[in-house]
Image 1 (tube, rainbow, N blue to C red):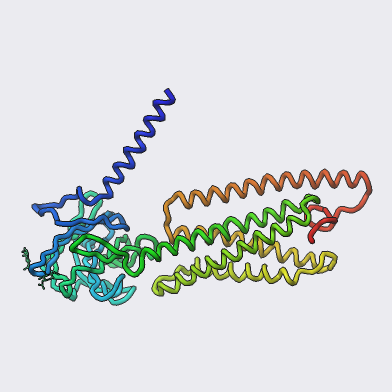
Image 2 (image 1 turned 45 degrees about the horizontal axis):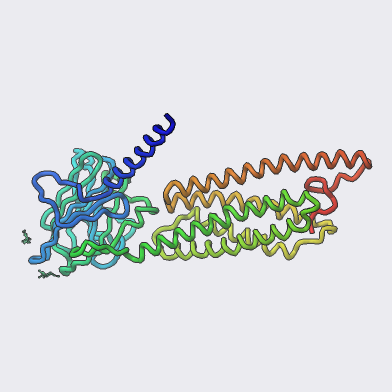
Length: 395
Ligand SMILES: *[C@@H]1O[C@H](CO)[C@@H](O)[C@H](O)[C@H]1NC(C)=O
Ligand SMILES: *[C@@H]1O[C@H](CO)[C@@H](O)[C@H](O)[C@H]1NC(C)=O
């Protein structure tokens, strides 16, 4: 019985992954009216869109169909950029619902800035035909155009968004798929290459994400757990201190490298600023650097100022951990990796929190036992800080 249930689930899994792989292939897509199939098609890497085209070498024209999922109240766009990769300079076809009739409209427009007011205007190359339609969750844009400079390698850019203002397309998300959606397309072969180093940029964004999640988000909290829970045990002295320092210094080195990579990535896309993520990142760098240098100013444990230093060190330390976790989640929202990465990180945090709660309870039991034992032996000596262990505290 159990075995058949397992087989049934396994079969379902394969069938569903098979059908989703099918859905991503452009080859099965058909078009309305009596449109013949196009000579080529590509399933685009982002925004689940696809592009179909036929190139006519005799007169340098292109018949193209761009299809992308979107709600009927949103908009999609496909563009050729004759002068550069990306949005600035793009000559775009935009499909969206007419604000008064609701009928699908198609406009052509040229983008000269990052925050343009979209208008229906001529393109820098002749357009012989343009149409758009909406059916079962997908927009399709049809166009016939003359390729700029008869070039068979074109910078292609595409977009999809639900943001409209006064009934006209206006703005789109500036993260994830919506910033990666560009490529250089070879119309003769159907081969694509990443535009503007897009793939290596994506790769570096992923490296930035992994480095920072591991250093700020896992190693630093682990270092805090080591310090807080190991030092109660006299036998762990002074090992806890060196473990704590080793953990935090390596986390700091990896974290600052990941932070630097983040700043570099930010400086490479001047039009897009993730203000909160950037500001929290800079704050984290300042606070963590302060922690490292405060180490050299640490008063001796017999010094009366040592307690203030401890309060300072713990406050900044916990603040760094909280801000780190917040910023890692902000990073997830920008990078939009597959959900499994976010889930894995949540699992790690929950595990660390569970370990901390367990050790907290365990430690208090140890400390309280120790106290009652001590007060049996003598009537005084409760210690000054932490868990009441005056001896062996700190180094
Ligand atoms: C456009 O380029 C193709 C090949 O690159 C060539 O065969 C064709 O004659 C050119 N057409 C025009 C109109 O220049
Ligand atoms: C370009 O050539 C194709 C194929 O011969 C033809 O179908 C199309 O009408 C031509 N377009 C123009 C604008 O001349």
